Image (cartoon, rainbow, N blue to C red; front, top):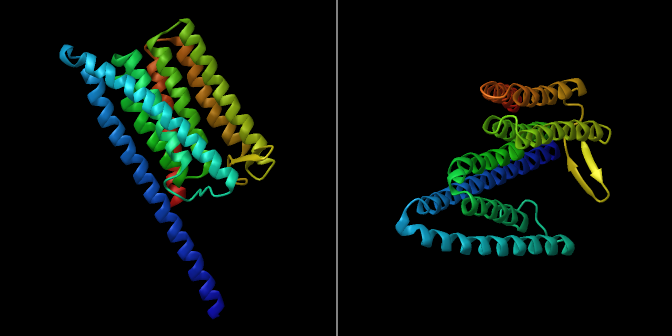
Length: 263
């Protein structure tokens, strides 16, 4: 009886440690997103004032080189740790986390440099969106994370279609949206045959929990996302915005469903 209690206490302690680790990592990611947005907001505002334009331009160039160097250094750090067998997945500070930070920073600064007017609108959505996706990845079931990631891509593509209806950019956007949905369905169906894990050589990634959802439900969800993309491309403005809101509603319904499952 005492042995069973000891094992139970040990499992509970491991669970609490894992929950603390997830909470700390999510807090670090959101803090990094807030700091990044705060710094970038000052940067792109500098472009709109004549007296600070040249200073903002020089600061942007410096940040590009810093972010590129940080990304390369972080990738080397992660690769060396993996080769040595010293990589700690449970660590909040590791090469992969830093590489992700510098990759987002580099992409953001490049967007500010080449189109600072667009950057102010886009980055206030993309950077918080990445933080939310990390929260979903850490706390929810894997299939909801991949659905969220695919929905994010399709939503971005529909937004592009709404801004540039019946153009080559819109055609490319709908093709990318359909490819994202098709790739997600194929990955899910392939992973189901291997216990929810998609494997390619020595690399493997969990796509879903074992038999947590039927193939019909997954195909329906991604089919709805693909349908919204096609409607947005075919109907154009203002119906593209309606498709955007409809897909956001599907995502919200899925979020409620998986949140209830966590309780």
